[in-house]
Length: 468
Image 1: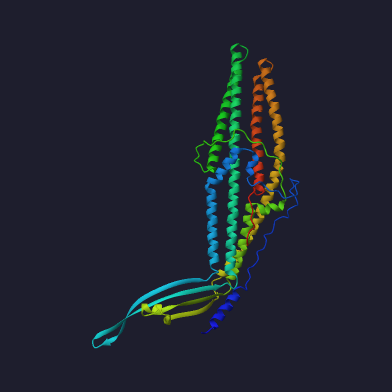
Image 2: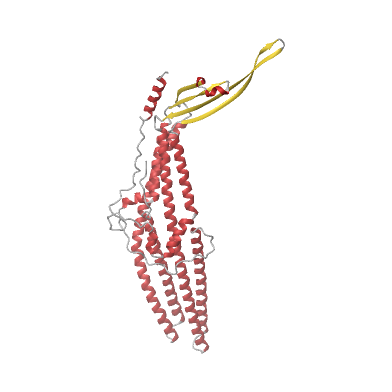
């Protein structure tokens, strides 16, 4: 037996491992992150609670967020994309392995062999064969491995996007719960305003009938009642829309029947921002952007390796005979061993253009990562700053509600004693109920800003080490 072909094959296998896979570069940060956020003094790492919505202490929010995570089809879409990326990575990795196929063939031929006397002569022959075929592309320039690494990075991108979808859904659902609750409270404030306006209108009408007030006062009081009714209808519509939006997030039919808490929860305790650099590795969108850059890096390496020759090995072995029974005998065995080298010479610039394309895509991915980092830092700082601004505004509005309520009582008493006109009363009432509506709105803003803060830090989503 000639062993040279097998020595040659072993040498090729050895050479296949000589080309090392290029190490990806780290995408550059657009700015050097400081040691601490400007809006927060904490200098230690901060872990957002995994189920951060529990911090609000509202069991109904807990139930609805968990329901949305279990039922909303958005997560099913993201999971399907992740499975598709996993399948593509397996396809890419399969090219590293030899391809083995088995075959069986049978044929019957009839051939013309000449003419004897006046009759043509023919022969009929059968042939049978069975064998195995092996082919393997030797990855000398790491082209296949670069494609596989890119595909694995794409899986990590989809995994990060799945986590991002999970976080986004939880954020939207928690906000929708709070918005529906606030709208319900606004409806109650509007109804209180209506009941108060109706009581005032009755008292003014009674005095008008006694000749103590003018008809203009009655008309203005009736106008106030009509305005209060319109306000009730407005907020009922807002509440209805908020309930239907929440049901959409829950994966339910939008019938407007979902139940939420009657009052906004108390704002959780103070915030800690942690270290800015931690945000880069915690936020799902930044993880996805970084892995997309790594994928683009490997795609560029794959395109560069396509410029070099491809070397493949082929082997086949089997049995062939004119008699089917002979296939069980080793004497009819056949085999072959071959190698081929395919080098691109001229393809109209397609391969070079593919390198330029993937190089540009890598630069694009790097710029997208930089933009995402800037946006992340901005969101954290904005949420931290808003904590103080919104807290001060809530305190001021609470004072305004208290003082405006006192002015309503005083103005109505003076009006009924004939010491003030109806316009003073109506203006005091307008200021009071407007302040109550604004106070509810700023309380909602503080709660949603806290949600934005949790989301800006990554939302408690676990981050596993990314495999290159």
